[in-house]
Length: 300
Image 1 (spheres, helix red, strand yellow):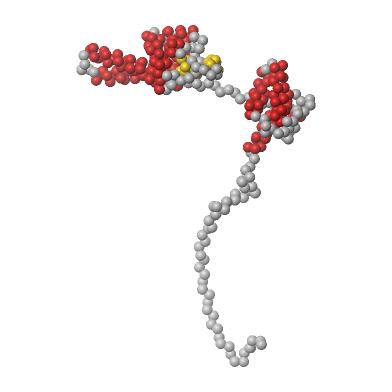
Image 2 (cartoon, helix red, strand yellow; image 1 turned 60 degrees about the vertical axis):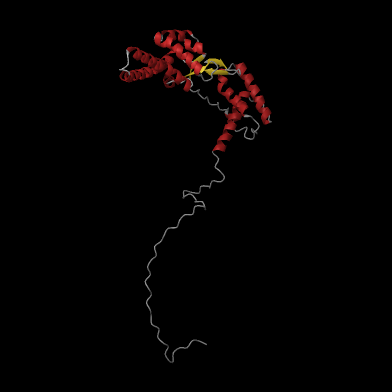
């Protein structure tokens, strides 16, 4: 870890890249640049075949300087210190204060790289990187830059230890709305690292954090409860409330009844099925006879 300090007196925890990862990144870059130089040289050999030897030598030197010196400088400037090899190895070139590099930094690094990497086959760069405390070569020293690692292993999140069983559900009525997030973070950090602290220092920190919690909640701590156990129980109560709030069903959601289909909102009516009409046969016509004489008359 490198303690780089910015202009605002902020300490940056950057990880300087060491010789193996830097060497691998440089090798990858050189493979790409040399392959491009060879392809360009073959194309130029056919295009300048009609020129004299002096012109051919001048074009060859210009192409060498352009591709093996100018292109790396342009790539580092435009990508803010991440060439193809550095991108593959998870590295990046930054200033001494942690900021992105500019053209002048890339120019000094590229000019010194011709001497360190190409003329001496990397011997000077290897010696300078091994001697430097932060693995810098001469180009980094003169340019005021540093190669750092961008991909670092993530920190393992330690869980908060559970409270003693006899303190479970004892703080259900405690008002935790006035406790700020910064105090919760400090309590959590203490509980996850209290086994790594000196017992006297850890007890003093627990007592101070417990006093802050009591001042924020307005309820005194139970008599005879250790400060660390009190912190565990309060944090466990807050986690239980957060979990209950997260998994509580929404009041607008319809309640489930049985295993039947879910109710359909009124805004989306269910279309009724179309029933084909059933053909009905016409009723037979029965002839009606006229009443005869002397028949039954309707009652008066």
